[in-house]
Image (spheres, rainbow, N blue to C red):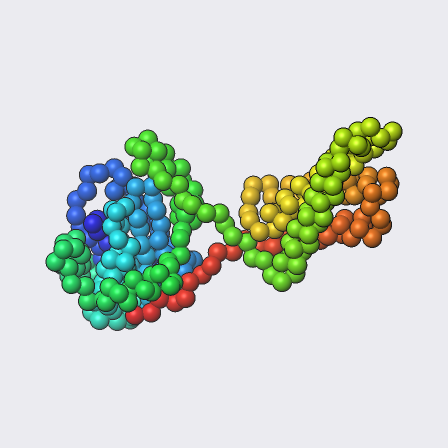
Length: 312
């Protein structure tokens, strides 16, 4: 069910109106704090977002300088939450123009809108008889094709993150946010990542060829050099795969790991070259690819997909 709704001015987060239900639940009160902090930062986020607090869902839409936030139970359908916000937004914009919102100077100056807000909230909490003014099929299709931007607790506030997550884990309600931050990968980055994968495949083939004839090679008089070559091919293969991984996904100490893998590739290739297992073209080609991958990571930036504008 819908537990709380807040309407705020997007430019500074000044609250204009909100539901006034009295809540004693600690988790609800903590989630309300997140909603109020979210309203003050909404200009830095896309205009349609969702946030899991550890026990509840917060949904946000922004339009014409006003943000609309609702706090819902974990099981409440996302589509109904956005239908609620959409209807709330329509009613508010039809009641107050932009000049009125801009001239507000004190918190909750438009609290009289709370009467209509409560009526809409009650309707959406009675899902069996609900007849939303927003077409459910249209909203369901829009949410499916253009999902809301997923925020994390760290986007709201580090302090809230620690406090709320600890409370949620203590009550058994914590569910981790899935997925990692994705990284922008331009055309040159894709080419370099493909080279890393090709080098990994090449070294794996060479490694496999030596291992498959292991019994014969172990009786060879230069078996120590062969064992070094096997280790070098394996190290170059694994390091190349790691570099491809670092190019495509964020991880802790990613740049340091990439530098170390580049150094390992350099050492392995030079060892293989000195022992005659690689010619100069392959040796310096792979070393150049490895350090190009490191350079690409330096130029790379973390980004998250921003959904299209949410218009009504």
